[in-house]
Length: 258
Image (tube, rainbow, N blue to C red; front, side, top):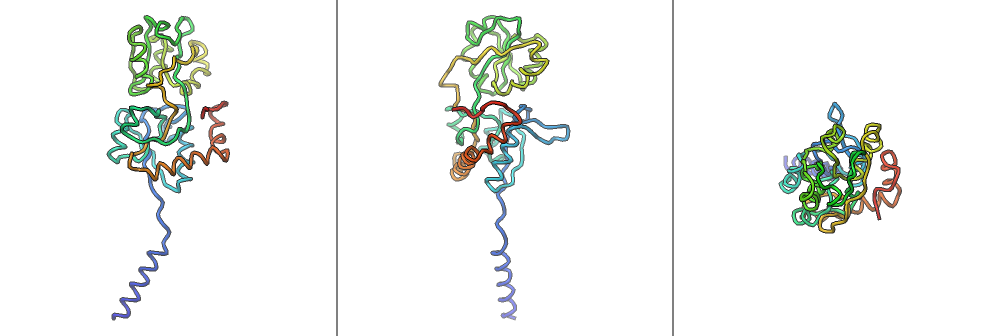
């Protein structure tokens, strides 16, 4: 009897140690509101876009299973800190204010803030250039912070939950311009609708307190090993050409920046 138990225990032990290690599973948080061409869901709830392709490649290199978890943008940092998600990969700018709460990977793309205005307006990206204008801004974004600091005294700011809502009101003439991430409005600017009504008026004047070096993967400050692994994966993508392969279907120019 003792011999049988010992043999059984040995077999169990062997089966345990012989089993392959389970892959890590990470919950990836992004905004519940679509942000094309970076991420947006189809009618069935399947997400696609540049950032989704980036997530897929990153998770492959981390040897991890990843699940997309849409979260209201205003609650995405609390969701990370409380463990509801494990990473934020949703075009989040690296800023000093956010870095007080969470850690960031190295940047994985960069995009300046700019202004898209109605063609029949004389709007420019300066505070004086938006005087008396109705400006659309998206809630919880760098662009909202910038506009409140630099444009609130001269323009009438209207806050929206999504960029698509801003652009709809711009086309309808309910706004004179929108302050937005330049890459995020490229599809609109190049569309038939966008070309008919509007034009890009340039980047906003620099503000080093608000302008970020780029977009980074948001992580808990305690996840130092994961941060190192994410940075290594981003570097490897850049080095072996995969980054450019992912980017080419969406953009015909460099989005990483200098």
